[in-house]
Image (cartoon, helix red, strand yellow):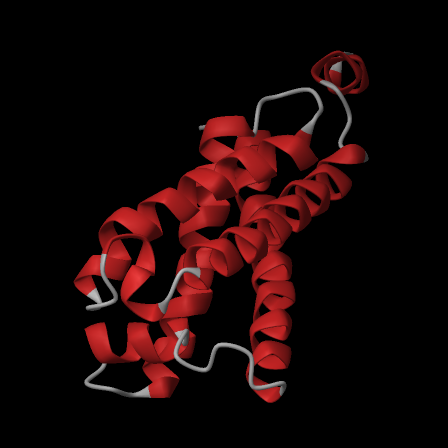
Length: 158
């Protein structure tokens, strides 16, 4: 893997981190307003991997959102020339589907989280779309000032 590609992976992680902070702020506000308290992904993660620890839930939330999704987004879309914001949304909808089909049932919330009520899949889809938009837009901003291969080759030429 060349140096430029490796740098983009770090940019993917950084973009995932920023998007996860935004997602976390939305989740925090939702909780403070008392909206759907039964939909608590942090507690779900804590229950699944940390024996009920919210701290473990938060760590897992950031590891998934920043590292796993940031790296995977970069691996899939990192070489694209533009359109990262909409690619981020498409990517996040895929992540949402995975959450609805695999994670929610594993957490006891049922397929598409329907045990939590009909608003659970809608609310989680909305926050995933916001996450994806922020992920893609942040990644685009981070790679925007990166010189093209031809410009880099010109600078490196004797």
